[in-house]
Image (cartoon, rainbow, N blue to C red; front, side, top):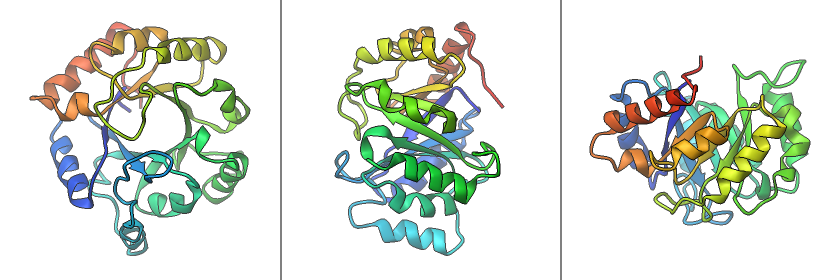
Length: 244
């Protein structure tokens, strides 16, 4: 799995398809994060929220998969209240990683238990089947995710104060949060989403991030392949390489 993961914030299914087509030609990209914003936990709503939930449900129930499901692993970043309502359709459509937000639900233990019972095996979560991560905002205390660590495959720190939009300014407070968490839990993979560029990546990698989620920094570049390769090379400088 690449240490650099492009993020798509789709306004429509057509936009998702078109962006995936662009990324399919980029060598080295094996995972894509799809930002799923419900318009309530974060705004504005992205596809398939904002009254378009039936589109995802129809896709899942038909047996069809997300475009390029054989080409990419899909990390679905559920920026949604009551995320459990759409977890099933996302998994049915091809999600292999689910990122829930710790601040989005008061019943996280129940959601995690349900995921383990439905998609896991006797000894808990099976990463090869479905990986689970928890995200936390810049202003939230990391203690929100501490009780769930034994059930997580990774954690995600948000690098911007206002989530749900791409192109927001990087919030440097995330660097200290990543560093502190990594010192306490050095074996838990940390990914950072929001504000990641070649300028901000070094501090995050030095602090302990092992995966970087990059949205507008890649998709708005003139040459996605060149930008992607530069970020991968930068990660290698800090001893972080692609993982199987």
